[in-house]
Amino acid sequence: MKLKSSTLRTFTTLHTWVGLVAGFALFVAFYAGAITVFHHDLMVWQSPHGAEQPVGTLDDAQHLLDETLKRHPDARTWVGMMFPSEESAQPLVYWPDAKGTWYYATPDDLAGSTEPPAAALAELVNALHYSLGIPVAGIYLMGIVSLLYGVALVSGIVIHLPRLVEDLFALRPGRNLKRFWQDAHNIIGVLGLPMHVMFAVTGALLCLSMVVAAALNPLIYGGKLMVAMPAALDTAPQVAAAGTPQAPGRLAMWHARAQEEARRQGLDAFEPVYLKLTHAGDANALVEITGEAPRTLGALGAVALNANTGELVASQLPGNRDANHATLSIAYLLHFGEYGNAWVQWLYFLLGTGGAFLFYSGNLLWIESRRKRRQAEQGAAQVWMAKATVGFCLGVCVAISAAFVASQVFEAKGAAWGIGVSTGINVACFAVWAACLAWAALRPPVRAAIELLSAAAVVTALVPVAHGALTGAWLWQSAAAGHTALFAIDAGALAMAAGFAWLARVTRLRARIGEPNSVWALPARA
Image 1 (spheres, rainbow, N blue to C red):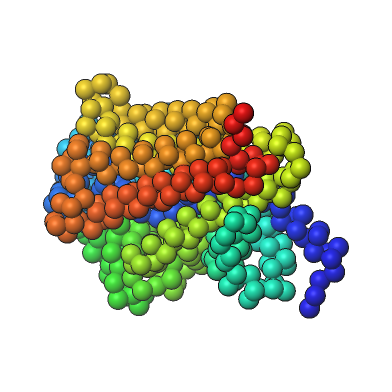
Image 2: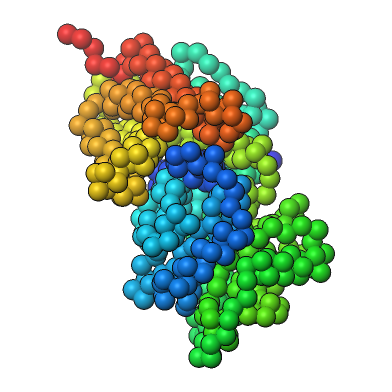
């Protein structure tokens, strides 16, 4: 079916402007999201010699939990705990105090700290992905961006559907760089379409579920949303403390009871990952154990037990969940690719970087489509859009690489300098990003693009250098020792650095020999 030219123009305009409005945020979400797929590996990479730590035992975890409850009364109200595993070798406990400040303790730091160990880098990259690093409001902003993203996808489908096969296999390199960028934009968009639709739907669901629930509160919940919400999100019910002391059960008992209940519900395997304990030492103490059931869609499930007796209170396990828990669990695993092995992770990484290219190239195409071919001086809108695209998009690439380098520097030197790792990483990231934005605003767009791409290449190449120099874990040593995650991150950084260097070379070539009347052309020498 052939669309009318007026209809096609309407959808093209819609696609262009929605893409421009949401494109900046989506570039950050996709670039950071591609990296946060390796969230657990980043925690090992950040911590010096983290990969060589022996995996703790349940006895280690029990000792840590006992000491935490004895030393920190606030933890008795609510405490969470990560079980030791290959991904997180040592157990970790965390709890909020009466003011809402979170504390973290490990077997090596029973006194507790406000900084989570070895998680600062992974948490920063994840925060950039889901909220642009903006507390609270950023999550809702990204939810709205996800909806706009869906509109851009639908309009893009309408535009390209009549010539889908032609667009898919057309990649025409040559002197017409605008056509080449257009072809690359179309190919990546069409090939990644199913996954992009999934990202848009799950992103909106994860970011806006609370907003939708609040909007439907009068109709569905009868104004009792806050009462209904805990049951919708948690497995264990909310109960008040009885005020009657009672000795709590042991971790080994909770671990065994959770696995026993999973087997009773037809799951061959269930590996506890973390727990939440409320009212420890009280007759009404409850423990909720969340774990993974391999080879199931929405593999995360939970079992709630009476913490003192081990009696089953509630469960939300794969195959036996209510619709709300099943939907949220599946949406989370689909969005972050946590349902497969390393091949799935690398597929998501490629889709993430490809998606970032999609939005970057979309801005470039908008600028080129409005180029004034008969005059050297281009319009202010095109010039400032080019500056913003270069500063914002390339700036975040430099900033994230700078955060990687800073994580190693502050892990090694932060204590001596009196600066926390999390503080150092965040300051480095956002200061570098701000500097890149300022640089792009002050420089001609093409010079800023070449310079920031070159900076991204250099800083990204420093990632494995900093890691090796400050921890001794050079990438060839990681490969020889079988630490594939460490090797993959360092080798991936070198590959990304080579990619940035290639883009800087291509941009410099375009500036020298491309069409002269453009924001991407160097001014002619007098």
